[in-house]
Length: 189
Picture (cartoon, rainbow, N blue to C red):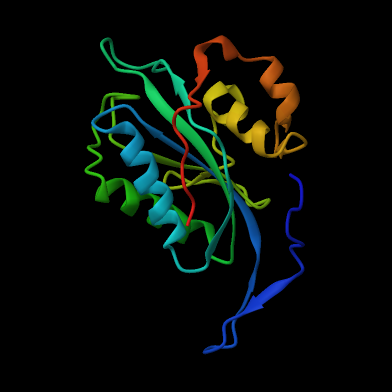
């Protein structure tokens, strides 16, 4: 990724004196139920309101047919957000789930069921995790055009840890399913 903060640089908590490394994060937002654009904007606003998360860039909005979803699932709006943070990955995951819950995300046993808002942690610095609660980098990001294309728009030289340059990954996926929505622009605070 370009301009990834130096992992040796730390932010000291002024109250406790704890040292926290600054990490670059990549977050994917998606919605295919209700007012999809309002949900994306709300998810972006909630990320921006998260203490110790500092948004640095947001992609354009892309419309995509639902991938591997139940029949009748509507199209998604998707975007990617870049931010810097001192928060640990587990706390970021908790925040992502809380944001989804705030937008009435219903969870079911049906894989890729329609949702009001999806907040996926794609990358948290160079952190790797294979726990049920947190998988980093995101285990399917390398095969998802709706993650790779908006991320490429922001960081063409980015690398997905364990998978390689996103420019090369993008060549292996079907981008014809994506439509850039020039009429929709997310506003970062």
